Length: 506
Image (cartoon, rainbow, N blue to C red; front, side, top):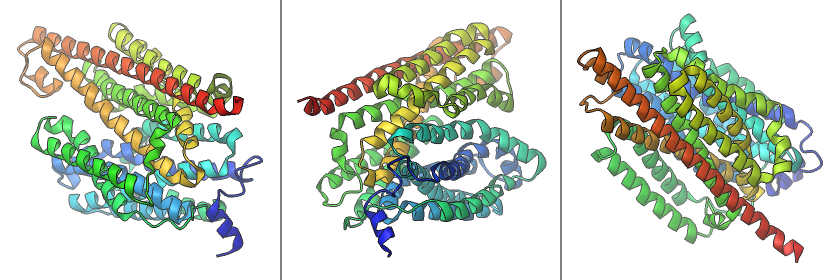
């Protein structure tokens, strides 16, 4: 190993002071391209379900596993992937992630059976976990404090682009090619990424003689996978069903064992003492709740657009795009990065999450009375809130963790998003179902089934009104949770700043 490489192993590359790495913006572009590919694969498959059902003779259970294998493997490995990036090199793990993702995409595109496609999607999830953690860790390494917030905002923008563009890209590809093409288009992106990362991204890793925490890696992977599986399968099988309760209990027990192990092992993959840092805890609370509100509300919104207002899937997807576009425009223009020094991190997070809550409330109140026009205002306000709060919270999490643990910090950030996403769908979906059941007595398990079984137009109208009322109630619950989370996160962060400032003042 050369002296330069050894130095980079002990500390961030030369590039974290005095403006950062000289090619930092080009590196960010490469990273965002890789990140976008991973995020597109979270949504692009949904539009291919009819084709997969016909051409691979896939059952409903097969389709669920095609979708869930990717997210389960990815979420279960996030902490382990982040720790591996810190230990063995973020550039090396980024290259490995791109290679695995490309190979998995090739296998998925050429799959001849449901089992082959599910296995390929699981392999893509391994690559996705490495990419999700290493991309944010590299951003932290190559940008200094003066530009890091803007860089993280642009990195966050890719999530919104992935959400908005996935169904649209998938629909376009399926109109012109066979279903396998939605995976094969990842291969040239992965190849370009491999060349660009090898040429541009500097290596950085943490080398202090730490031994690999194999037990921690196994426990975190099993625990996270079990919890995420329970969250994913709860709406389908019922929250009190045996498999869901068993999976949730297994996840809780294993994650508790993981926490105990990390507290006592001399070389933990996740230092549990991070949770004594009020800045870290405040950012964690905010990150979970903004993901909770945003994902849960969009889960409800797509149902409102399709079941209540009568839009098709593609039209419904297009009508949720203003949220993502607002995030993209505000982050590309650097609005959040300019406001952060003026408002401070607590003020920026509180303002952003208050806007998210206001947008949710507007969708709930105006969406029913004024149709899509009322929703549009709420979507734009929500987008403004997300553009302000999410980069500030990601920066707060990464700033509270030592630079040599940047990969673990990125893994924590991704894990929190997964938890928030799953909880949003689970909790707000449960509120919707309970409110709907309280207003009308139906035996059907879904709104379309209830409408099909209704006796006449009057009963169908009553069922639709009850569903719309349930949507309104659940969105207002989400708004209250997001607002409370924003205030809590801001208070904890403000207290942490005062505690940090006290010794300096003394």
